[in-house]
Image (cartoon, rainbow, N blue to C red):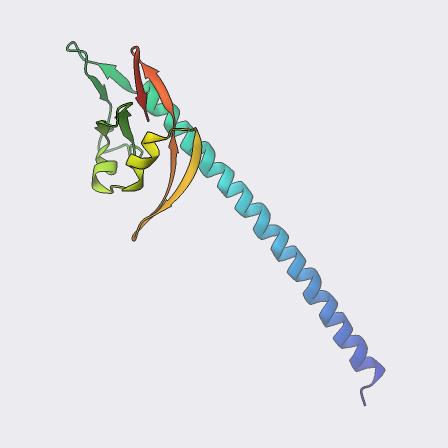
Length: 137
């Protein structure tokens, strides 16, 4: 038979494990939520960067600034509304995402998670008008 002392010790251990489990789950949930929101904000900021870093050439073509060796430009693809690729950053050319062409056909201002065999991408696709030209970024 167990003594009262042993029963109370087991009860306290079980209560502490329960409290610690709830605490760990709460901290994990809050950190995950904050990190997810921070990534979403960064992605929306990169989208704004993409719309502001365009330059129209004298022949009417559009060119995006692709960064330099001291600046890491984001993964970016620009499509015409008829599905033609207009521009890709060096990073997007180096790490193509096959689903990006499908997403470009259905721009809806949503952030979508796309997993490739080697990477996981969060992709935001939306329509913009630049120099009176409708595009999908």
